[in-house]
Image (cartoon, rainbow, N blue to C red; front, side):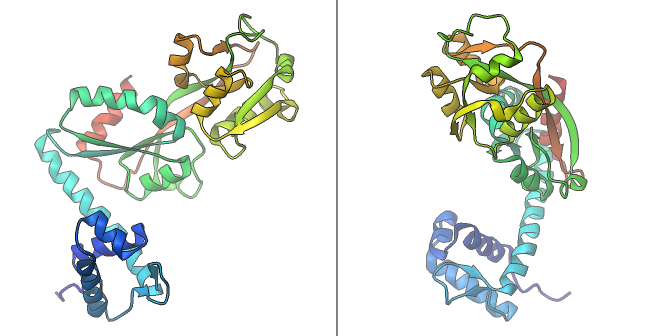
Length: 303
């Protein structure tokens, strides 16, 4: 067998340069000197007999050959990590790593509790939580960068054949108003009452905003008539805006437990409307599933 023209260390350094955007930042992230990084890349290019970076640019820009190598380097390094996790499983959950993914609201308000329960039983497992958009999380699971994830948005059609998708739970979305609002002490309001409210909302590109608009539309509510007076980019800013009396809002129930307990906001029910979205647990059935990942999945489904 012909000797390979690269080492795993060279691939790791090469990928770090691409991820960090420069030789200097890659060196810092790997805790090695910049000359050492440059030397490894020079040797790699010499062994491959091709340039991997376009030196005419100040930033680390890949050549066509560099783009090809990045594609395979990513897969090779991911497989190496998968191999290590498989070997770590021989210790019967006495060590190892678990990478969990979640979309924004789920990752912020739901997953910390689930991870806490898991860590109580398996304190030696190192757990990493990545919180991103549904699209990015699904892509990371499909490409082996995340072991298991919980999402609430639509999975891109091109990724669905690569994933195992299982219904996990329902996330209830509710209407909240300031505690001194006229609606705050009503048992329920009517659909038409929504048109009298001033709303603060997530921006239109938000997954939760789209889900809410879709469900309201299905229940005969014209979302174009809702008075959206402010659009914000996080659930925390939405909750703070409601507390300060800037408007009403639709939020996930799991995001307002503390605010309800402290009477900072008030939940308002709407006659004949229940706003819920399905949450899904996703994994990659074509990649090795560690014992830690399998155990975490079982724990979630048994709650």
